[in-house]
Length: 244
Ligand SMILES: [Zn+2]
Ligand SMILES: [Zn+2]
Ligand SMILES: [Zn+2]
Ligand SMILES: [Zn+2]
Ligand SMILES: [Zn+2]
Ligand SMILES: [Zn+2]
Image (cartoon, rainbow, N blue to C red):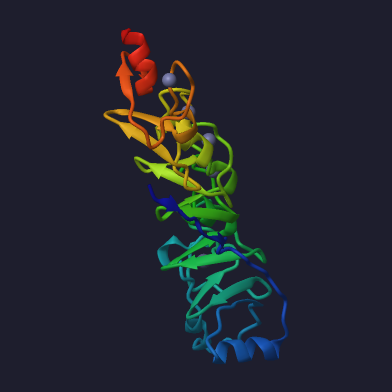
């Protein structure tokens, strides 16, 4: 009988903040290749025909403005790592909502809004299938809400409790004892063995030490000879009397 332990609780991976920072900070972030997105305004461009090629919307033929190279003075563009978008085109790949100044999560080449990212990638509880935002527990490498990780039999929470598993299912100590432990032939309560409970076994029957008594004179039979009489156990003296 092994007692399992829960892995320490884990926190959600999503802790996003959006900040507005100055030009210098942006320059530094770009130089250090920091994980920041920069929203800036298209400035009037000198009509020399060269600088136009500097911008290309990352959506390419999917560009919402219909022309990935279009630069409209006064509108905004988003830069993130090596790519650029029109402000409108910088949108969640799932719900297509423009990110604007909200938080986003890049994954592979896609951009997600926080809601869609959670929906798609967040850790889900194996019991209720809902997202675990904080303080879940891990059992057999699977994530659970603390409140969902309960005894298979009585449903009390097992987080922070001692529990025992059987057939890959967790049980509280009380239920485990009730359901699976050997039972005393005399009082029919479980013999759990937890805390060193001593018991007597004879053939396929078991007794608590205190319950192992003569059916007729009630003296303890622990360490003595005894005789079985149908379902009862009796001491040699009472057996003798019965025969006379
Ligand atoms: Zn575009
Ligand atoms: Zn979305
Ligand atoms: Zn749950
Ligand atoms: Zn229980
Ligand atoms: Zn008993
Ligand atoms: Zn007796």
